[in-house]
Length: 175
Image (tube, rainbow, N blue to C red):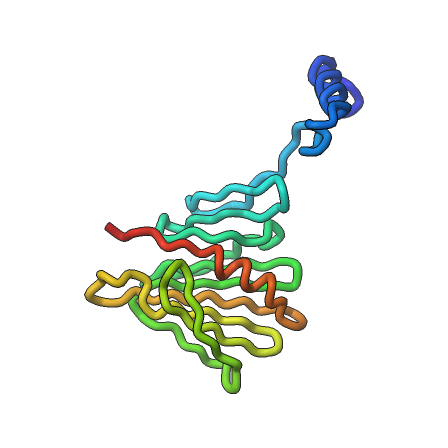
């Protein structure tokens, strides 16, 4: 037997009572259903119940946070770790590998130096695109591993959103 919301009667009663408690109500109550995380080629991911952001660890090479409305899209990577996500007027791509990615289409872009997870990096920005380049991910690598992440916005760049994504990146030790 289930109640109108599809839960067993005892669970529905417990949830109703729990929502009345001020400490629990501050955290929030739901019907026990959680959104399924997006499909992800075996990478680790977790959805934050606070703001709907997803923590991803593609290939165990690095971790980053992204908005939950970005959905993974098919991509064929040949010699690197790469991904593509789309949704909400934003496209996010990254590429991590031995070969440096082109920054074509960024002519006249504003450029600034920054650090990502303690590594020197460059940010390039235009009206609708932000690009992050980490030229050497692991200092100890004899052949550098390069990392590029690109955010393409349908409208104007959201600098706070771009910075939140970029500064969430944490590279894993390859050894």
